[in-house]
Length: 301
Image 1 (cartoon, rainbow, N blue to C red):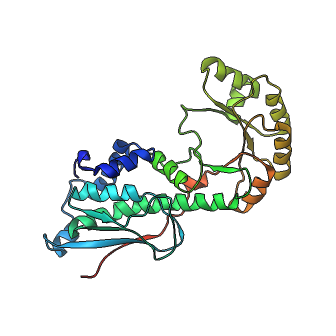
Image 2: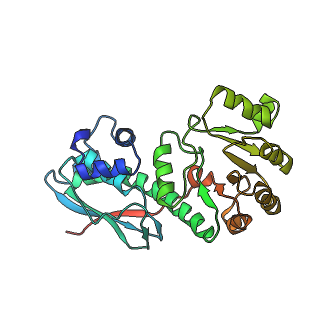
Image 3: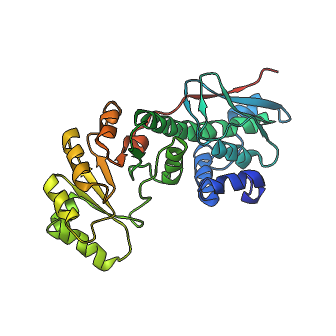
């Protein structure tokens, strides 16, 4: 794999401007490439069947409609394998809607290297495009309502930053990144602390200034939080039906952002939006999303 400082400046800036840590992305790519070739090239199949001086152009195209994401990461994979000896053109910006047959990127360089990079580049771009496409479907279903779709911490280990980036590409909003940037009081914390209010008070006593979200399962718990001089920064409405969520919005009257979670499906999205909640969190965006179908084909000589 080439050195990190060989990344083209424009691509380096693009990764950073997307809110991604280049070192982290590079490490993910290195790990993925090492799964294929633990000791580095050669790839026996490509080295045996392709001349050492052969060069080719490969075309990555969409095979279904959706929204692409991770193409900058895929470009980085080709640079990781081929260094400066690769040309990448016609790459669509991440977040672009596409139709089946649309070319999303062209790569040209040594044929052997293109085929070494192909699968890792596709694995990442297909997965991230699947997340972006699923998120875009939620955004479309919620159109016209005040509700925005959130991701969760239900992510694949090591890929959280990329998965949350893909959610942004699809038009969604990121929830907290980890346990450190927002406290979230859920049912087990309530049991351990002896109630919703004691849990909230304990967090604020030990971690002043940290935003807190508190999960409630009924309107009585909601009312107790709203009665506080300083309610939490966000309240999560857990497994409530549409009528109860609508009542929760009425009682809250905009004082605290409300998030719906639990029993959430895309078919229910429009009804949830009609309740007036501020957010709906969807773990399925990242933990069980269907990959988007992108194909890589060498141009015929």
